[in-house]
Length: 349
Image (cartoon, rainbow, N blue to C red; front, side, top):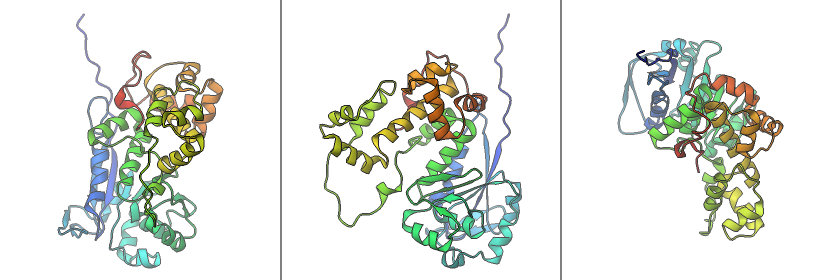
């Protein structure tokens, strides 16, 4: 009998509308188009439709020596499943007083209730001024965090993270953190396999360790010193094994105290927290891409028991391993347990 190739059913493209404001940063404007535009279903079909609008159709100034031409006006926001607001250097009363100009307020009024809202860098000022961030955890560029918090006291500002995810309201820190956030959204929508593929094609890590603290300028430069990269690489090869802090310190020829201090300075978290995070990432991969029973997933990831696996996955992702697998196995291609994760699919080192 002649074999036939089964084409997976098409997943309706999720519409992302990017709001281009005067004084925008071209780099940030391009992030949603680059990341979401690279996300494909198993048949190679786009998972997102990305469109751009302005407060009116026509030219929009940038912080560079060129303008961009936007085809759509603000009415396009009414069609969005997700709205992205990149940063702008010309926010005026939004940045100075936390209030929306009439034209911007009228544009945002087109957004339907339940639409997912995303900001990149100081684009969060727009969402906050509109009241969308009240009571929500949010972040922005570390250099603006104190000002942001004083201007919007009802927002739960976290200045230390690269991005926040508070359901349908997501915010990122400065510039490149917008890439991290968009990859996170792809991972949340369609699983780690799709997000990792986008990251590989974009030549960026699928996940960056630590938060903004590693990028904050310090008054006195720290002297050059040995890092903890080798120990992290060593850990990633042994996530299924018990890992002691003394073993990690030995990889870098450091005392446990020195290693712990330097690890936290580089990664933004303790060695123990980092290991748990990497084990959760490995568990996500196995849950999405294999049919291994929970006990085996627990052993493969170093959690030991299914109970421990459930505890850590629920703490990190907010759902049980079973619920996570049920959600994300539906959007990816399954592999046999023997296939295992490829080098490209490993968490970022």
